[in-house]
Length: 363
Ligand SMILES: Nc1ncnc2c1ncn2[C@@H]1O[C@H](COP(=O)(O)OP(=O)(O)OP(=O)(O)O)[C@@H](O)[C@H]1O
Ligand SMILES: [Mg+2]
Image (cartoon, rainbow, N blue to C red; front, side):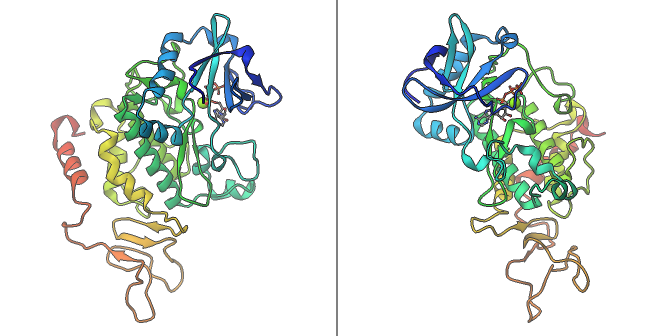
């Protein structure tokens, strides 16, 4: 992107033949050439929504990215389609320019379609019926670990996502290191300010008791997203304590349950940065060579898939999942010591113990 932060619509060469947004009702997203020849996307606000935009806040959004340190700007650009310029049509704001999501965030078989986080919630039947890849739990968790890390980065810059939901975040496919990429950044809040006067948020992702978008609503939605992707059910509401026991240690499930507590006072005042150790552990479940692992209350790290079935002990506390010929646990399997002195009895456990102990949180 050139040094400009505003451009007149007439100076863009817009390819109107195909909208990447699939004909969205409020916005269209088109490939275009900027005046300097750069290939970008033009997100066009339709006439009905132009009045909802506060032009000065939107301009501040664009300038905010430009004044970031080069390292922060590079990191932001690698994980989000942040608006790079405001597009004017006479005196009105017609939309924004942004980068197109990198290739790995598009579906392999449909090059025109992006792969959003609903892909992580596909169940095996759906995947088989529509020939769409099914994502194993370690891949879901590694991608969502990157999402949590990215939220910590954004919150650290005083940015709140707001309308965090699966359609607004893309993910990589079934190869390579899982990552996510954020869309719809023109509606993010920077230093508490939203360029849109009218707030849009799908009903299934509303946070009970919340009136505005905050870091805490982002965390509620992120935790719900993790649970819904693992459950392969985008309508899931109640997280039960033993849920996901095969693929998560119970302390991680406790965190997800606390963050998504139905009543506002029941949720911990946690920050995304505090979830970094958990997010890192999730990211480590998929290695660069594609090898996958699982962590739960029994195993600190075991190769995925853990063999089950006839003649193989189903993993349970104290039972290694598979053995070498010598009867030793396979080297890829590290059994968690049964004492309390595991690395995971650390910040998170202490935090949750404290949190559960406070009278306001006894339910
Ligand atoms: N940077 C991008 N790269 C690739 N595709 C994009 C990009 N930005 C948007 N899209 C496509 O356009 C769709 C809509 O974009 P976005 O989420 O920014 O708008 P929206 O505010 O949700 O619009 P609408 O209300 O019309 O759904 C996305 O779901 C995606 O398919
Ligand atoms: Mg959207």
